[in-house]
Length: 94
Image 1 (cartoon, rainbow, N blue to C red):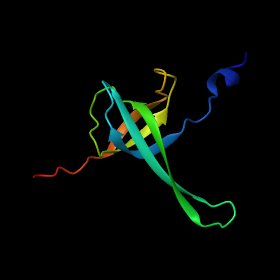
Image 2: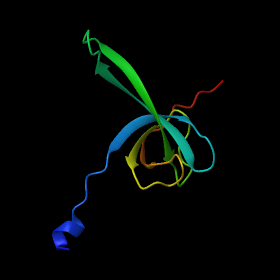
Image 3: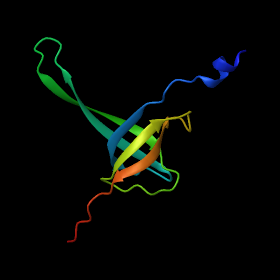
């Protein structure tokens, strides 16, 4: 193997989304929204994807805007991990 073959690796995906669930210890669900054109009518359609991500520090709360990145499989459903909290959720006083 050459040095070039060992050092090159594809760029991992980064996604920004909203924390919609804290489903267990060190696990969050992140929802991100996107728009695609309708195949026939070309009108934009809203879509969403829910991803399960690893939160090592248990720092994320519901409503936080976070950046996640692809990683090796951590469990049966977790293939993403939290890189940073971009924006904390607003605190609502009752």
